[in-house]
Image (tube, rainbow, N blue to C red; front, top):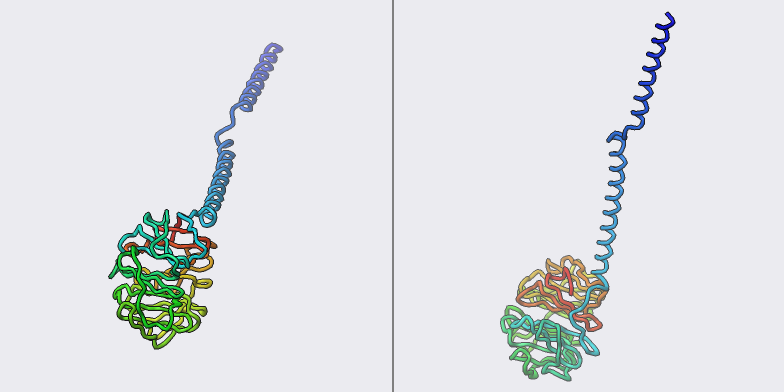
Length: 324
């Protein structure tokens, strides 16, 4: 009897020992997958969020730099003043720059410049027409000259204008003999014979005129005045103020010959662009660069040049989206 009791006691102790060993084994077993997947997932999400934040911060920083100090001009002109810019209709690499001292020319798309043949003569405005690509005009203070060999030689134009303080000048892209001239103190005039005889327009744009540009569509004339941008849809017979205006004073205008709705306006804060004849505007930059002159390549309206008040020459090959 006693012996049987001892056997039952040892059996119970064996069962308890086995249970303790199983408990210790369970406590020392590696944690299940569910225990470590959740922390790793949380850590991955945190790292991903930090990566996205860093990438967005870097992009914003680079983007702001591209629109400001990182944009470098292709050239810097040496001149006491800066007025006009023109791309030769016959040669897109041939550019002309006009100042009070005459004309400088570039033969490599604006990279390098040298003195042209018109010197010691004010060239406030330069004009040309694809219909007569070899003929160029230069006007300014007591200056009205023409070249019939793409700028190699220049001759004074005989005319009947009341004065030659010509601050605005445009040549019709469809009729090269049709010219427009804005004479300070006298008004806006038109010529149908290449500049020999002139008649005043029957109505004048309101305000003091500063610059004019002729659009590609025949009869559309734009005038920048101290009261804003005016437009004539009938060759200067009547004028209306555009409902939308570029921000700031209009310092220069350019109308590409290949697109009747496209218009560029230089302002104190950069270049503005309209794709609907001046009804609305988009600012293109370069930011905070006063644009004193702008020129569009006749054969490629996406290739645009502008000139800053410091003589910096900028070029865009994508209609002003980017500059270099």
